Structures are given as structure tokens and as C-alpha cells.
Image 1 (tube, rainbow, N blue to C red):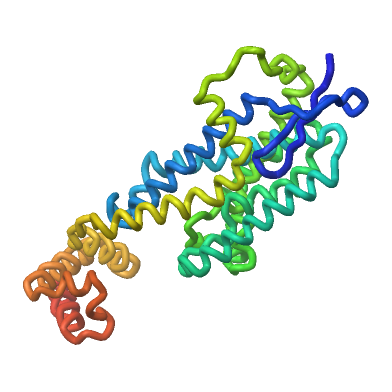
Image 2: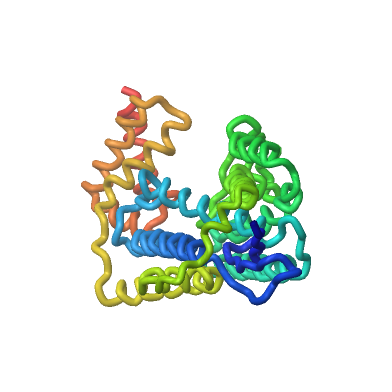
Length: 338
């Protein structure tokens, strides 16, 4: 039984090589490209939904809650698991330094580009440690687990997954340590994938890869002579070029939605539910639920009566300095205390 080696990297892109002494040519696992293509397609669908929310076609908070939230986590986990799996196929049992460093450099450079671009586009929520940053960091750590027993790697994966549940500390609230994932206050970012707990799926991918090699399962998944379908070929193409597709697809989708919004802007949502929710969230930090319900209800009614809600929502008046807003807040405070 021959052992195959895949030319892989921290990125979810990998090629397969037979042992060095019998290596005739370079080949790939087509099924792995297809799986990777499905993952990149799923990520594009999530980003498209994020764009729709950003331009008002979906309700605020849609992509960050409910099924969308778990959909996003599943996509990120799949990329990290595939990256760990590919690391094994490319560098076990023999570590290939040059291909690793080349791929690591590409991933790190792409992560830096994303950070710089989002710093200018979304300064308050720029991506300082997203999925590519996580893959790059996890790949360096993953090298330590390549030759360790699979059981040790799985235990480390479980520990990484559980760490944020038990070891959060204010010590990690400093921005320089946000990438660790143990801060008590979550930083604001459009794509936050800290090392903990996201090292867990990467290490799981390493364990799965080791098991697949040891069991000979990969040798039984050699390419068949049957011609793949058009869909399989398209997905495999996306999987083989996952990194450039990742870098290009979101700016393209965002631009298309922005152009559409210029022609058919989304209807402006009713500001009352958003104001009520924001008011309650701010108020309940210092006051009782009963007081806040009365205060926010009173404030909302007065703003509507005086036609101030829409200008406040649009940012045309400053609620912190406008005397009318201060007067309403004072009146409603006294009413809520009655």
C-alpha cells in the first residue's frame, strides 16, 4: 500500500504527491477540491447576506444571530479543518519547508491586505484577526502537532475549544492580546476569528488527516476514470483557487449590491423598534427593568409627538447636545420614577 503526500499549506489548497522515490507527476484529490469549493461558495453566500444587511435589505442583526450565526461558524470551522487536514497531507511524515513558507507567506500577505483594506473601509470594525489570520497562526502551531500522537492532538483540540469558557480574563482585554480570544469584552470587528477557540477545528483537521493516512483511506479515494460533472468541475476549480476567490469575491459582491442600492435603495426601516431596543440596552445597565420600560416608552412617545425621532435616527440632530432631547429625557425620568 503506497502512501500519498499532498502538496498542501496553511491555506485550504493542497496537491497530492506519491513518495519521492516514485514521484512521476503532480496530482490532486479531486474530492478535496470539491469540498473546498463548497466551503468557499458557502462563505460567499454568507458575505452576500452581510452585504444585503449592510445596505438595508435585511433587518439589522440578521446575519449575526440565529441560524445565520451558526452558519458562519460552520463555514469558518470547515476552512480551518480543511487547512489542518491539508497540512498533514503536505508535510507528513516529511516536512517540506520551502512549499510551507511560500504558502504561509501568501496567506500572511493576504491577511495583511484585508486588514489594511478594511481599516480604510470600515475603521470602527476593521478585520485585525479574521479567518486568514487564524489559518496563518494555526499553521505555525500545527507544525508542533504533526508528529505527536493523534490522541494528544485531539485532547489539545478539546482544550482549545473549552478555553474561552473557563479562562477569560480582563488581562486579555488589551488590544494587543485580542487575537488570543480570552478577553472578557469582545472587540468589534467584521470578521473576528481568534486563536481560541478556533484552533480547535484546525487541530481536529490534523488528527483526521493523520487517521486518514494511517488507515489507508486516502489510497482508496484515488481519482476515478469517470468524467466528473460540470458542477463538480466548477466546484473543484473554486477549491483549487480558493485564496484568490476569497480575496476577490467580497469586494465584487459588495460593489454589486452598492450599485443596486443606488438604483433601488432599500426602504428605510421603522426607527421605533431600533430606538426602543437601544434605549433598553443602555438603560438596564444602571436601572431596573421596570424603570427602563417606563422611561424608554415615555421617551419614544415624546420623540414621535415632537417629530424628533426621524431626525435623531438619521443623525441630523445630536441627542447628547440638543436641548429638546435633554428636556424629554428629564421629563421621562421623573415620570418613570413616579
